[in-house]
Amino acid sequence: MMTRAQLRIFLLEGLGLLLLAVFVVIGGFFLSSGNQAARKQDEYIARFSSVLTADSYEPLNTSVLKDYPDINSVFMGYDKDGAAVGYVVDITTSPDGRQLHMLVGIDYENASITGIRYLNDTDNPYTITDLVLQSIQNRLIGKPIPIAFAEEEPADTVIDDAEEPVTTDLIDGTYYAQEYVDDKLGYIDYVEIEIEGGVITKVKWDAFNMDPTTENRSAASLSGAYEVSGLDWATQSYNVCHALLEWQDPEKLAMKSDGTTEIIEGVTCNISAFVQLSNECIENARYGFNKYRYYKAIDEILTELLGADSETLGYLNDDGFIVFSFKDYPEVYTVYGDPDEDGEAEAIGYLSIRQIATNEQPSGNEANDPALPSPTPYVEQDLSPDGSEDGIINTGRESDQILTDSIDDLPMSEIVTRITPVNNAFDETRQVVHICNTCYKFLKDYLNWLV
Image (cartoon, rainbow, N blue to C red; front, side):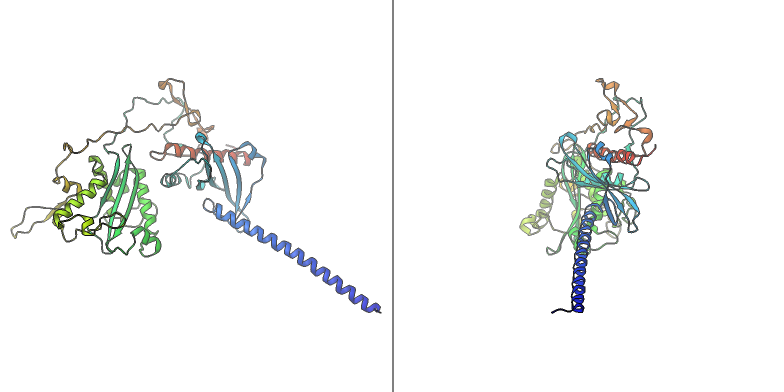
């Protein structure tokens, strides 16, 4: 029979086990909740950090959202001390029935754009190419909202319909040029551009190697086999190509005598090969001397020089590049002056592949060559916005189109930032500006901004 003392001990032990079980259950609950919260934050960081850097994100619950059906959700970003750093707006607009889904980061202090991310995850997406998106990002990131276009004028300014169209003599097609000789690491630079509507719409700059076991320079830079100061070379090449797309002229890259430039963000590498080859591609485009004709011309040069074409000689690699260096044959492309008294002649110029193929002298002009297509002028597309929300009132008479003093229902007096649209991508720029201005209007209502 259990004594009173034994019963007391039994009850105390039972109570202790019960309390321990309660603590384990409660601790497990909080641990599980903590893990779940940490996992949720990891998901938020992976999703939002590209547009707004923060240590944590929390959804914003406000009745103001019901007035903005395009906005899917808004998150607030906080630093490690719990201070607000900004907002992330998840927004989907539907231009022309297509869905444009984007994330926009906005700084808490000055309402500047911290990041823009395009999400191609809808059934019928509104497509923005990577190059166009980067151009738009370069114009908007770091700029405060709201935004309008620099071309827009005050109210009652009449658009001059008689203005002369911008023309260019570039013929549509794909154009290509490569260096004559390899560099000290065996790389031969090449540039390829595409012309559509008389303007440059695509640019690629890379280099293949004389050694077939060596990666192209861009791939080698990403794997760490090829290194330059600053960003990896592939990224710098991309930035240079993007700048040419934007400015349409290699001379505007402001290359210095040492081959570098200070006006393209993130570019520290030597761009002299790119400028030279881009100019050659553009010159080829004036005569319609496309990539096919360029390769055919190299084959003709090799046949005359070595007795066979690139494929027969084994100089055509698996990627279709003619991997040959004219290092030992400078006479192929060099123009020499008159010999001096010692019989030595100095190089006074260099011929391009096109000039060699057409027997053109350095001062010649093959514009009258009947075998070549005549350059056709290009009339630039009308980049003025459409619709009253873009600042235009359409009365049915072209002569009566006037600019109003609003954009996205925002008065021009309220505009903080003005940008120029991306060349040949006005509609894409306009849609992103509309999204940014929608974010501004939401924040204005939510925060009760007084303007």
